[in-house]
Length: 104
Image (tube, rainbow, N blue to C red; front, side, top):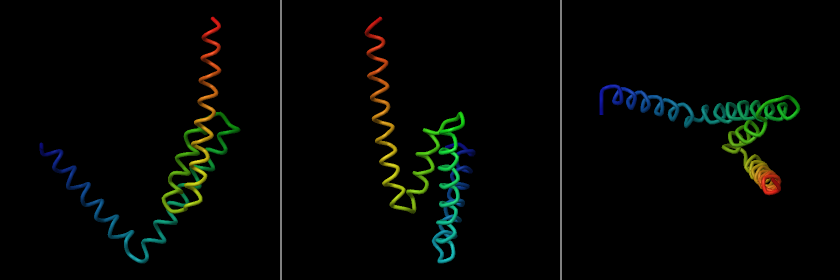
C-alpha cells in the first residue's frame, strides 16, 4: 500500500468510529432515525414530483424508499412493490420493442 492509501484507510476508520460513537449513544439513535427520515422522505417526494415533471422519477423513488427502509419496515414493503412494478413494466416494454423489431 502506498502512503495515500494508508492515509485514506486511517481517515475512513476515524470517520467510521466517529459515526459509530455518535449514533450508538442513546441520544444518537433518534438523531440517526430523524436524519434517515428527512433524507428518505425528501428524495422520495422529489421522485414523486418528477413523475409529473421531466426527470428520473424511476431512479429517485426507489433510492428514497431504500433509505427509508433502513428504519421503517413499511418502506421495505413499498420498495418491493415498486421494484415489482418496474420489473413488470420493463418486461412489457421489452416485449413491445422486440415485437416491433421482429416486424421489420
